[in-house]
Image (cartoon, rainbow, N blue to C red; front, side, top):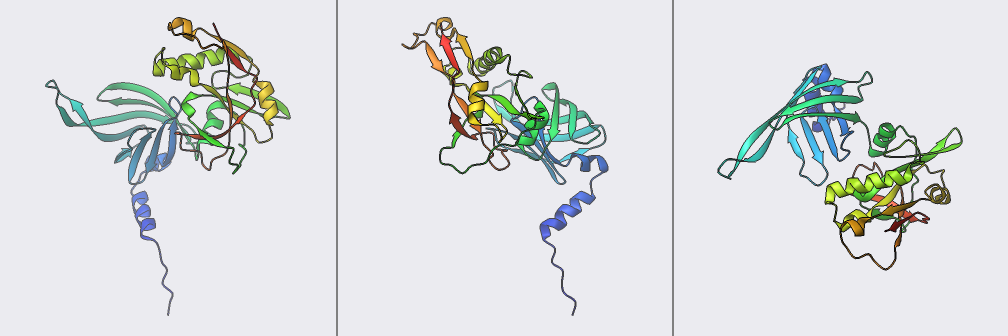
Length: 280
């Protein structure tokens, strides 16, 4: 008697949907993350498109594409002239170009609300995304130590430190070196102020979020980030300044956390700092 070959139903379904796709749709299948907004990811499947934005419910919809356009619809709510919320359909049309390697996408999105230009990278995980976006190479250290804590990435200014041909190199999310560290911190604070509002105390919760290669020691990170910045936060907002006019700038070293795709928190270790902020 011939042996029966068992094929999981889910595999048959995926095979069925995949066979129904054209070549352009097959090129789009996979996980994409926006370059302009790393918290926004697009997951193209043969049978659906799932849009994810940290802190928001996932959106799932059907989609279709050819070599230059992507189309889909999203059910949403809008407020009419009477102030009543009604069900509406947001029709989305994207004119796009894809790179020769099929891993970068540049698009112009048109929907009910206007026109928006954006770009995305197709990657397997968040670390790969950072490698490609900032053109750095690093392998994060791994650890199961209880010293590791979860930090909120929204307050962390990204810094990358690694070795290139045995030479220590560093850059930030704003600059291609660490020479402009003081100005970069100022820019990051201004970004937080735009997000939270200029008088919000959360603007002072910022820290340095260091993605350093596993070969880079903690002491090298500390020495590389020796900086003193000045702030007029209390003067500008007419808030009484605390007794101490100097506050240490926290440094958190980021550790590998599996695929590191969950941007609601990062696994990190707080390390020694000689960086500080002087408040006028």
